[in-house]
Image (cartoon, each protein chain N blue to C red):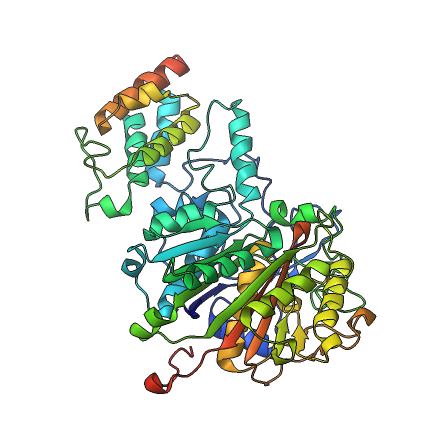
Length: 434
Length: 125
């Protein structure tokens, strides 16, 4: 496969910033997005911290109550079909298109596809079903399905933008948007599409997050400054976040033809499953280990060439340990010592959106030349012995990054990103810098 | 940034579907409920229609749809948007509108007349 897949546009609506510049500042300076949070007005619920998106109000089931930053214009006929996280996704996509220098009219010729990932909106589904049940299913909101079920992002965004290429959604829990990005890369490499838009989004509310509490997956730490601390011995679960991340991937010749600047090149990906437990990681991270090996093989690089690993690291006791063991097996065992960090220490865990968000962070790190650190890490778990876990972000300029994701059922997905080559024939100042 | 107020449980009914409509429309709704004045009902139906009209089909400055305006051909609605109007009215007036009834409605005037009849029959006013 000779076609190269370049990242030419990014959009972020996240707990650490609502555009690339804010996200870079937060990643470099270690500014986290966690705050004290009241999910449902019940003090008996022990989950007291979350990482909300700022400048949006989408906590009502009625689109009439929603507000978002004034720079985004969402037509009402589109808005009425969206879930709350669809509003985030819409804004992140608008941002990514502007970043890539694309207009809506560029998306309609069949060359562009759209891969999305969210768990759907449990909140909207609950609302619409309650409404339907109140009339014993005699009445219901016609937009109830498309604004609720998994797929709501691709239904709405494809229709709004008139996208006529490959459009689908991915559902592998916390690996979902990593699957979307991996398969998007393949669409480009196989020559099926020349441009892919990858969207990951989730909403932060009781219906999406609190069902993780009975699984004992959420942190009960009440201190926003330490609740999410991947790889630390005192970690006790993840902190929820919402938002959206959008990545625009283009085939290199198309990108060059229209003078687009590339953040990074996607040079490989791999996936492998644990085949072990419905919800918890394999104790040795066996599936993730294999997924990393497959991604590196696909990219044609050795462990020693990787400068930085963006770990999945959600701050759960079992998951982080499994990932640490898998990382040691791939890297430490071959005397490779890339910097490893979990940015969920800053952002919280965005579930389906996490993989695309973090791939976006990797693209920023490659473009701007920095390596995110491990926020809130004080005492590294002994399982991490031998891993290079910088506390602070480093000014070290990575050239090759591995991005890890793991989801329920032991789905593991890894991407390899490379700093975009500066072509001598078209060397121009990097105007991408916001 | 503590969240200002936790969200209500989603099963809580929307307090007032017309909450975001102009005060004159909410007043018309109240007037209809207390007096059964069908002119007041007409005003609400028209406001609900215009509220759901796609932005791309709106002519600048045009706020009134005549009774003869066809919902799909003239006002730019699609079948899903019509279903949304019907659901909104069903929810507001606690009536159920069947597909057959819906398919007989093509103009604003027919919708208004239909809602008058339907609401009157259901409420026994």
